[in-house]
Figure 1 (spheres, rainbow, N blue to C red):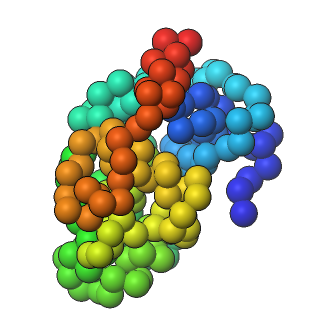
Figure 2: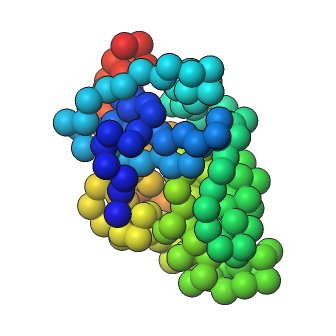
Length: 184
């Protein structure tokens, strides 16, 4: 369940819709996709402005690497998975099984940790795919969530065999929205 809309410190527009960012003790604790009706809320702190700038940089340049402080709450295993996700470079993917092998775990456990990632985009769980296709995103395998994963992977230029059949490039409407949102 997402936090109430008034608990976000920043709400910004992005090519993927509104993003809500929650901060605690000068660290990011959540980044959530919000409905398009959510009211924008500008950053009022240096960290908030840094987050806003880094997200804009990523949407303008998919090779941009985030350097932001986190305060993530999860099990020891989830924290290990989330840390490993930050080591997957933009434009590269791993399968759930490959990441599980690196961590000495199982693919399903890695998938569950990815599903519970509280800071998507910045902690790039979208770069983990299934051996037979794109896999899931936020616990879903279709609809809005999977379209976000497809967009993020296409934005980063990921060109694996699994994505050739499952991931289409963003439509011109999304590209136009990206340009509007980044220059707003």
